[in-house]
Image 1 (cartoon, rainbow, N blue to C red):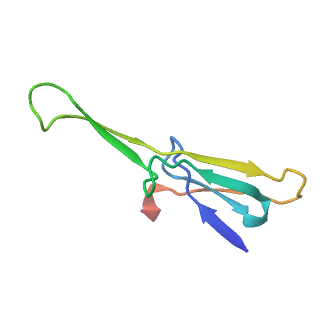
Image 2 (image 1 turned 60 degrees about the horizontal axis):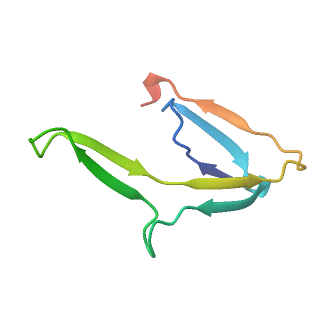
Length: 81
């Protein structure tokens, strides 16, 4: 059984496949009761439609390093998109 999790690496074309059994614990940051993402907008100047959109989220994974499992790195090329 292999689950696929996408982590926001700097390279958009990179995925890592690992067996679900290696995860000991996954903790997701909670900002409020039902909110797991924090979004803010920093206005650039007096023009209210330009600025920076800031999205924050947090995932902490604990792994069972004693398990002997394989991880696979999958890199897509431009022709697959």
